[in-house]
Structure formats: C-alpha cells, structure tokens
Image (cartoon, rainbow, N blue to C red; front, side, top):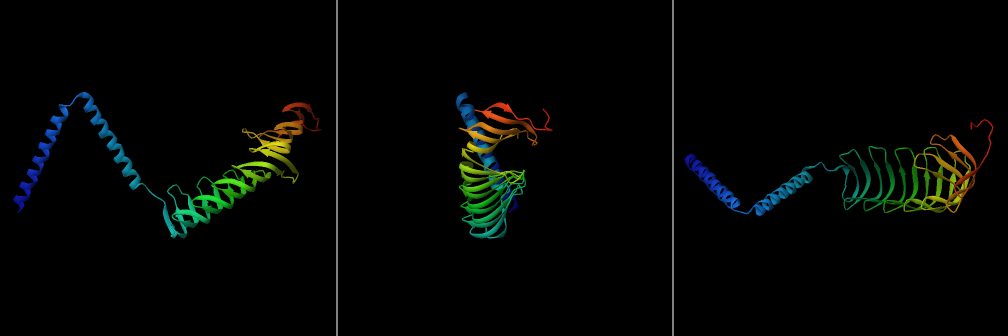
Length: 243
C-alpha cells in the first residue's frame, strides 16, 4: 500500500515535469513579441489574484450590536468609526449617529446610506451645521455656526447659503443679507477668507461696499472704514486702536 502511494506520487511528479518541459519548449519556440505578451498576461493575472486575496481577507466592518442588515444595530469600522442607528438592506437608514476618530460627528436622518432629513453635523474645529440634509448635502433651511459662536441662518443649496440669510454675531448683533453660492451678495454680512481673516459689513453686487471692518484670523482689527466696489477708500479713526 505504501509502495503504491510512493509510485503514484513519483508518476505524478514525472508527468508534471514532462508537461513543464513541454511548455517551456513551446514558449522558447515563440517569437519575442508573443513571449512578451504571455509574460504580460501572467503579470496581470498575479495582480488580479493579489487584489482578490486582499479584498477577501481585509478587515471589514463588524456588527457589534443588533441587526446591521434590517433594523437597529451598531457597526464598527476598522479605522475606529462607529455608527449606531437604523439599517435597511445593510445601509444606514432612518435615524442614526456616526462618530469618526478625527472628530467628525453626525446625528440625524439617513436614507439608504446618505444623510437625509433633519440632522446636526459637528466638525473637528468645533463648527457645526444643524438643519436639513438631502443626499449627503446641506440642503434646505439650516444654521451654520463657527467656533467663535458666529452663526448664519437661511436656506442652503448644495451646501452653501443661498438667498436671504441672517448672520448673528457673538454679541447678538444681527446682520441680514442676500447670498449667492455661499458668498454675501447684497446687504450686511460676513465673509471668511481662506487665511482665516474676515470682512464684516455692507455689500453690493457681491463686493465690499459701504461701512465695514476687516479682521485678521485672530480677530484683531486690520481696517475699519468705508469700501467702494471692493476698494478701501476711507479709514475711521478709533481711540486706542493702533495704526
């Protein structure tokens, strides 16, 4: 019995060796172009197999509580993100909260995996938005609040204020203006620049026009006076303010 097994193993080895030698001979008889093409196909096959193995065995989200297919449950992701709430066909649905390790947090409505309906989103810097969502976007009536407690309330379209909106400063002073694509267009309002500086005052046709103040990113006054078509034309003198 043992000898028969050994003989079969040796025979299988010889057959495999003969097939390999035959394939090698056939490969060597091919033109250089065909040899290169075969090597390329083998390379692609190895890449495909590698990616397949990765996606099969990579760490996946784990349902740590309840039913994460249809119903209520909690889902933990490999990066530390945690979702708790409703599910439908494996997607976030109805009401739920999601917290990410970098500080992003959302609680509110969901529809098939996307933020939808009433909700509140908190950003890592402490700013927040509370209001309507549609297809993962701020869409509808809502309020965005900056870390210094300045807020803007109005209608949001594609994530930005659009139309009439009211800005409320930390000292409770209200400024009403008209916005286009998130930028104050007419009236009184605030605009925060990429470097953190901000202009607070009057606007006309999307430009600084009228009385206003320009602050640096720390809240210190840079200029205070009057603007015309985005140009500073008159400076106001304020006692105690360095020039």
